Image 1: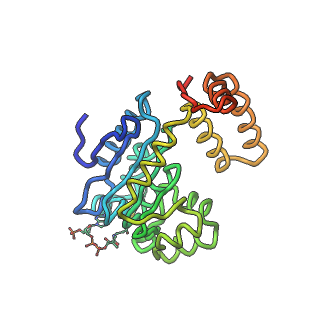
Image 2: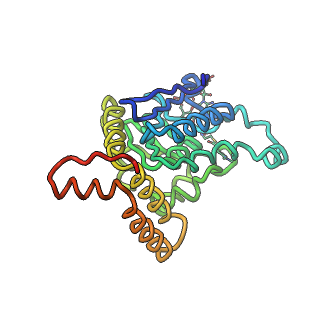
Image 3: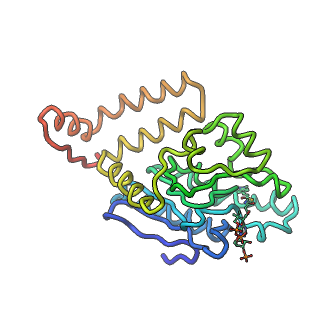
Length: 259
Ligand code: DAK
């Protein structure tokens, strides 16, 4: 499939990389781009050779938000009846393999929300995060008011959502929004190394880990612990668990078959 607003490639035959590609608009996210992103992620998720995905942008912008020009004249009934950009934004949450956001430059509004929908964020030292929607007379609409406080706590989430200020990569790492900060010129190397490492493990265990960690944000502690326990028990039914433990006992490298 050919795409206009994203570039798609694989790395090491195992990592699916999607680069947002509307450089003149700082990767502002419109309906067409989100359709393409959803299609690319869905295709990678269905491809058994792919173990992990990466979403990235340009040096200047991961994404500066939803396309303001495209939505400027919408009415309430337009966005409500049309379920404005909800249908294609939700696709990323249906992806079952890990998705890493490699963020350099601006990740604002919908761009910050897109990064937060990924499983974790690796940031370049020039990354800047924010939810500036308040300046436009709206509020975050793709999960920002829910995922940001879960990541950074209420105080900082309120600060960002109410003032619209940006935070730099150092503050974002300190607050727990990003897992690591790396030099800009090392961003893709570090992210691909993490992605390729994930691809070395049992895909079944990786998917179970992702699903279990996500439970921590979607329900209560007791339910989450029970879900984790059942997933943990279930992994003893896989060949990969036998392989992983036998390899450790016999001091050799495990070769997982994703079975
Ligand atoms: N939309 C459209 N165009 C944008 C844009 C955006 N969000 N951000 C930047 N651009 C365009 C600029 O208009 C400019 O275009 P030209 O004038 O060259 O034609 C070009 O990109 C370069 O931008 P600047 O000249 O402004 O560059 P600077 O370096 O001076 O400033 C900036 C960079 C990122 C600080 C600035 O561009 C800026 O403040 N941009 C707007 C950031 C923003 O407010 N983002 C939030 C948008 S609201 C939902 C899903 C998502 C959303 C809502 C609902 N559902 C699923 C329901 C999300 C909403 C939003 O994200």
